[in-house]
Structure formats: C-alpha cells, structure tokens
Length: 435
Image (cartoon, rainbow, N blue to C red; front, top):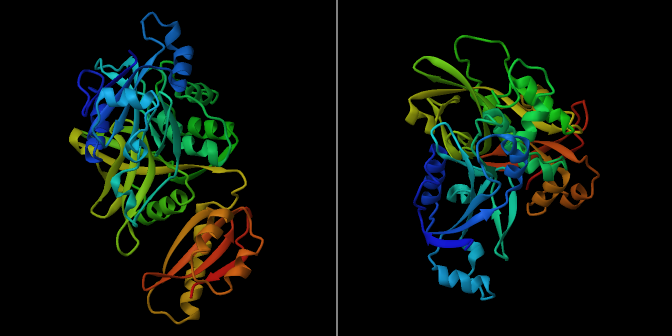
C-alpha cells in the first residue's frame, strides 16, 4: 500500500538527519498534527540527479523517494481513504502545511537526505512587519488537489550538490516563474557551473566558488548584482547593517531571494558557506530587525537575529554548533532588463534625500525605504490608497520595472518617487503623493 496516515511526528530513521530535525521542529511550531506518507514518489529533481550520478554508482540508491505531507488537523487512515475515494475532504487545504521529500540517499552520518520540500510560510508571516519572497506549488495528493504557499527547500547532497548549489537552486525556484528561466536540478546546476574552470572535481561536488555561481546565473539568461568586497582577509569582514537591510527590503519586495555568502567560524577555524535570504521582519519603526533564511545545513525559514544590532553577524541555528556566522557578500540574480541595480540607485537616492532635507529645511533625516517592483504590482498596490490624482497616475505609461523611493511621515506613507529600473540613468518619471 502506497499510503499511510499516522500522528505527528513521524517515527523511524527517515527524519534522523540534522536538517530533518530542523524541519520537524519547524512543523511542530506551526501546529502539525497528522502525517500522510506516499511510500513511493517520483521526484523530478532527484530523478535527474539519479540519472546524472547515482544510476552509475556501485551503491544501490533507488529511483523512488518518499513524500510526507503534514496537516494541522487530526484524521485517521480510514477517513483519508474515504476522501481519496471521492468523499468530501474536511477543508484539507486550510489545514495543509506542505510536504517533505525523503531521498534514498544517505549522508556521511548514514542519515537519509531531505529532498525538494515545500512548507507553508511560518505563522508570523501574517505579521504586517514580515515580508517573504512569494512562491507557491500545486500538489496532487492521490487525486486531492492542494496548494502550498511557500519556498522550496532541500538539504545539500555531498555527491552532487554542496551548499552553494543548493543556495542557487533555492534562489532560482521562484525566478523560473517571475523571469521565465529554465528550472534545473541540483546536479544540473553543478554541471552547468562547472563550465567555469576550477581545480575541483564536478562530481563528487567540492562546492562552487562565486565566479562559478555567477557563471550559472548568466547561463540561464539572467545577470547578477554582487554586493560586498571580494578582497581576501584572514579575519571575517561583516557587511554594513544598513546595506544588508536596504538590499534585503529592495529585492524581497520584488520576490527575488538573495544568496548570502557566509564565513562560519568554529574553534577559530573559518569555513565558507552559502544560504538564501527569503524574508525579513521589521520593527515598529520599519527597521529590519531579523532575517528569514533557507539554510541547507539548518532548515527552512530559519529565524536569524543580528548580534549587537549588526545584520552582518548572525545568531541562528549555527549557535548550537558553537559557530560564529558572518555575512560578507550578497549575490542577487536579476533580470537583464533591470539595468539600474541597487548598487547604482542608492547613491542617487542619498543625494535625493539630502536635496529634500535642504529644500524643506529639515533638521532630521527623512524616514524612507527603497524597493524594486513591477508596474503591475505597484499599480495594484496604489489602487487601494488615497493618492492625489490617482487615476492620472494609474493611466500614466510606466516602465515594467520600477524602483520606488518611499518617504514616510510619522510612520505613514507620504510620497513615492518612481525611478525607471530599465534605464541606466537616474530618472523620475512619476511621483505619487499620498493624501
């Protein structure tokens, strides 16, 4: 029988790895009560990896994975079988937390690996201060249609995909829809990235360097914005907190994840790591006070806090391993028609803020944020707002990609300066003045 229903948490060895334990803890916090197991599931990503590597290995990794679905309500196997047979499910969609794929591949600790998994955004996503990169996946559970709003996650595979490959894979998942670029499995990403010369083997994967990561992104028709310093240093050099905060806000608002290049220090021995920033939280003043990260070594939606107010120094699940984590660089895939990137627009925004401060003889700096969006998303947003000459603004021809410089007065939207993201020049085609 290919289906089994049992209470949460699942027992046995399928969820024994460190990442699996992180996944189960995440599900527990989000109210998981019941599990539904598909004991034989064909996962496309793993099937490609199997074809590229495991099918030609002496070891006996199989072609099939397991897929486990999680729900916040309790029900029996008999009840579920009745639903599959045509009975009306008891609003399963609202109770659905998503699924986890378990691959028939073991890591160096002999634990089964977590494959392509999609879990619902955390409960705090309903907080107005939270913002996540948007993505969704349609699921057919023995013919029952379901949908999970969340970003895919999986653990690294020591044979075909190290952390940088998984960070790229995670980042590209929503962009395949946003920018209509091809979707690749981890093994395919490693192979394509190998076109850039390196001294390491392609398989088993020793990990990708930054030039290889950039090479892969460009190979699928996108370009890259790199923020940070490539200068090698013996000591960790965390990025500036304001740059991290503003860049994260700018790109998460555009539903573009950011790849974080990290230095992880344990017992004074540094190592390099990559993870994906998929969301953030703002405090009551609109300042970014935490990040949400997909980390293939820790788990999905990992809450990451700054140390001493520095977003370049992370406090998260790595602390359990007695590690210090430093964010040193950001790598962001961008559409080629977004010609004015974050690094280019910010100096102009700074000059604009200084001009407005002088013009209105202000004693304090203006409260503002900068983010990238599309003309469709922006016009959909402002239709709900009270704006001077709103109809005229909505009827104005605007570029597909827009940088928005939003100024706040006493915590409320005051004015938006709209900048053409498809131009190489700093132009302001329109202004939205809030009433």
